[in-house]
Length: 142
Ligand SMILES: [Zn+2]
Image 1 (cartoon, rainbow, N blue to C red):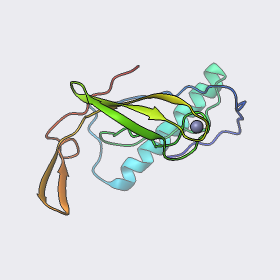
Image 2 (image 1 turned 120 degrees about the vertical axis):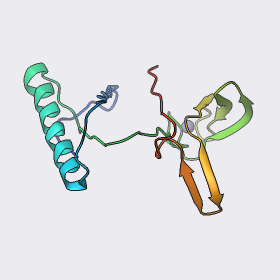
Image 3 (image 1 turned 90 degrees about the vertical axis):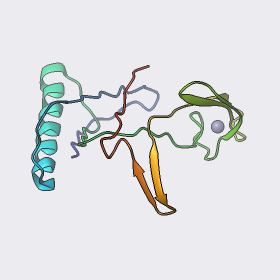
């Protein structure tokens, strides 16, 4: 589902991201029916934001099922790919590493939170515990 608005953001302006999570809904099994629901939701959310609140979103997207979050290895300042990570430390349900950009010399910390177990039956056969409903993904805000 994709909802495009003719809005432009000042490149210096920090855009917020809005997440809406729906649980306890019995959805149809058909992929096309689910896609129709997502498109309808996207249009309605975009319309409500625009008409009722004057907020113009670049896009409104949705998916069905648990979502994984992953960030790229690009520098958050200059975008250079392959930020160097070193000095890994494992803490509780996650890990941290020192992050350094060789291009602009930005330095920071990479924080990983582990949310999934995978069962391996062979080299090419792995099964996500979250995707197979054997474990629940948890979502936490900052
Ligand atoms: Zn950089």
